[in-house]
Image (cartoon, rainbow, N blue to C red; front, side, top):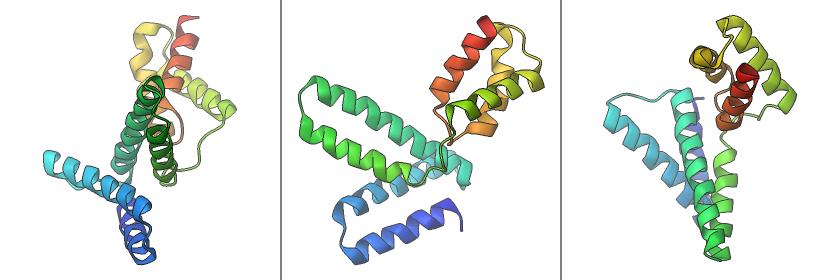
Amino acid sequence: MSLKDRITEDMKAAMRAKESERLGTIRMITAAIKQREVDERIQLDDVQVLSVIEKMIKTRKESIEQFKAGNRDDLVARESQEIELLQAYLPAQLSEAEVDALIREAIAESGATSIKEMGKAMALLKQKAQGRADMAAASAKLKAKLSG
């Protein structure tokens, strides 16, 4: 079963169970997927759906920071719930050691020796870790390894 199918089935289950908050979040996911499909005139595969979900999580994390600054604890709680629901669709996250191992592999495979060649290594790393690691943190680690 594809990820899109799983999301659709979860939406139906949430409707039957009358879980309005879960249903609302799942509908946001399907809307974002459909929007991207219409914009790009393609059918998204699982990797592309994961990138849509990751983008939604990133947006919510940024919103949480803003809401905390504005002392809006009610909105922080709502955004946190949405992040939890969104993360349920992501594959199991890699540990720090696994991310470090993938970074070493990417550097070895790409032959990158300096920060100028970071793009090659990052492309390989992204293929292997997409959806399973925080790519911003992985990028920072990769940059540190190549510059140090």
